[in-house]
Length: 165
Figure (cartoon, rainbow, N blue to C red):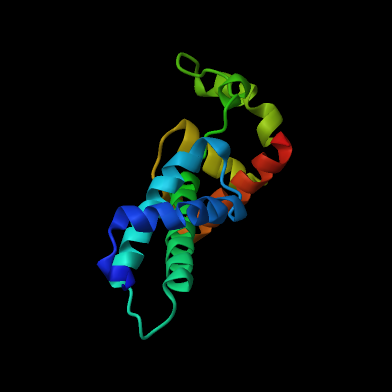
């Protein structure tokens, strides 16, 4: 009896622990284990459906299919986190509330963060963060390119991060 002739529930029974072992080797956080197991079951189902006996043994095929899909999921989650969730818990206590302050008062509050910035980095911080101008507007105002303003931004953020550590 081939793998495709068996019920999927029998496959899960036989390879369920393999999914947990893969999750363990990938060092998944404890709170994500059940979600990863569910994704592993989906990957196992894909392996079961796509298996060709002439290519490899099912155990090898299933292992690498499940592992590959879980790694892709981890990468996808990490990319999403890096792009959308850069806020760190507790940061709201470090950054002062500027909702009803003038620009000069806001600059005074940010003094400790910007003291090590270059003039161009300070320009970007003031124009973009405090005044809300677009990169194109800043570049036009200071007679430079948008790429240069982006470079100011990158280096300013890097410097501020180093100062926060």
